[in-house]
Image (cartoon, rainbow, N blue to C red; front, side, top):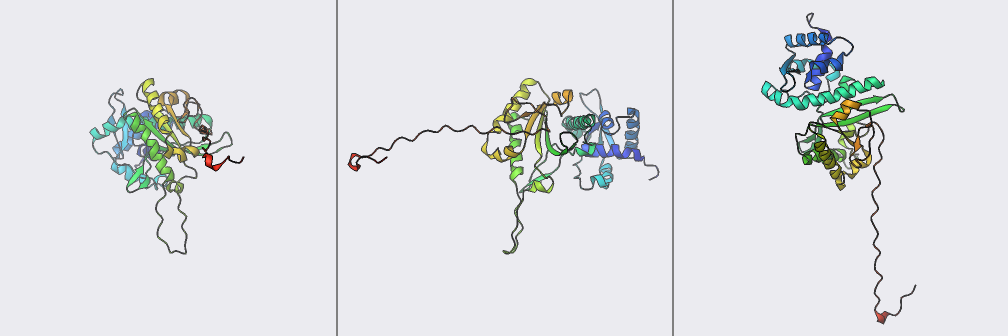
Length: 318
């Protein structure tokens, strides 16, 4: 253990939790105030110790991408910060890893944007507050696995804690499949596991399963990228159309569901008013702000026709 570089522990933790990250992403997440050569040396030492490995990303200027080995995951899982964390399913072959690298690096880039934005604002969103692929059961073996739940502590506007589910889409699925994720989150919002059988004298209060982790249901953020403005607009409209379904009313009445493009996040920062509510794409607001959904339009009232009285009954009284 005397030969272990403890300065590399924070780099290993980021690589393990984020699944994959480039050298620059690891550096900006962990140690932006020092020279990047130090991060390169630490990562190289972790690789020599068998804790991480790397591959060359296709179509990205031959960028080196780091990922944890099975040994690295086992070591990091014993640390207090990751003790209750669910380890990822490892990709043992480099070919399989390359097929996942595009989406995984985009998710890492999104998390980095939130961390950097919080630093600039003097608020708290640490690298380990971005937690990819957290398992949320729905019963019968089904589950919701967000790209990343996000934990954020505000210091402005009265402070407070915020949770968000972040979904990153690179246009690798059709608009209908993307929009269908809204219905899955609506199921999670109302899902309560069946209570354990108890004697009749004891009453069991059944609560939704998400309340075990969160005080309030996390707001839902969709980040769209991968193609041009027309495709992003199509996917936004698909999310907006699904929001009118009646089985989403419970979720949308209490939870902000917002959508933006990856380009706007990287240009203006996640805290900027670049987010559009799926119920009203004409609005733009910060993801941290309060959103009140529009009141449903009143249905027109059709007057009932006057009753037709048989002449044998006489004239009706007023």
